[in-house]
Length: 402
Image (tube, rainbow, N blue to C red; front, side):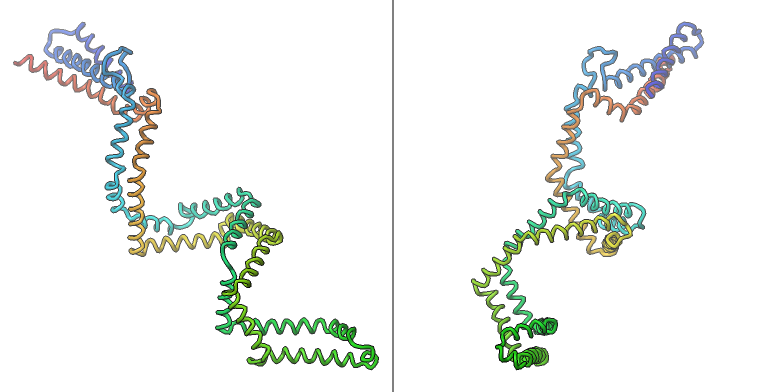
């Protein structure tokens, strides 16, 4: 456009020279000369005006030229002030957000068919999770998680919690299956080790009992008595030994909650367990397996994790689209958040714009502004040339008839 405007000016200048040199005396020649002369003056004036915005015309130190490079900092401040007063004000942001249903737009985005932007979110989120898990120091992260859990467990006194759980289980009768399971386990253990029991009784029997064979009968009687005892404990609800066990459990529940000595023993046992290296090795192995499974599931879009994540996003999107009350709450929260961000950080955003423009050198500022609006400025030159020529015709006409 600069070439077009310049060529038009050159054409007017050449035409003016040719008309003055070879023109005749007919009235039409005067109109043509007046048009080309005024068009040349108008084109030159607008060339000077447009050029003076960005640089000094012909390099001459004419006052009030090269306006943009000379006033770069003032222009930056004016741009920032305009942005602050007309866009980054809480009133403008609140008015704009009131007319925009952000929650419904988010719901439509999340419920869009997979494969579009919503599908890219699913895939991108899974890959991002996998990349994060792969980039982390596994051993260090595992130690940090373990240390965090241990620190939280150290602050929690577990004895009262155990006492409350045990007391609630006794009150609801949930301890009875545990007692019966323990008795059955003891019966199976005794059955598997009958030979060991018989050998122990035989070793402790006298020589006379072993010579008469009574040690075997005693062992059988002992085993039969133990089996009968355990069977009665399982069958009878109010068996004395079971009642005694229940009383012991109730006393333990009370001690866990109210006895300082018992609580101190439990706390010491807890600290010893947390300090045990075996627990650390178990946790590290568990963390490694969990991390590898999470990475595999995140990489596979058809895995349960990906499907679950996609389904969850779809449900959230459907809720956002169909629940007006939820939309109002989210839109109100978004509006308040953006208004607060604007009120708090609007000045920082404006300052960033101003400082960025100020850091640019004069050539950069001039080049960028000229590229943005230079085409329209060249149209000003073209229009100035043509309009100047028309005014020349008007003036010449008035001169002839007035």
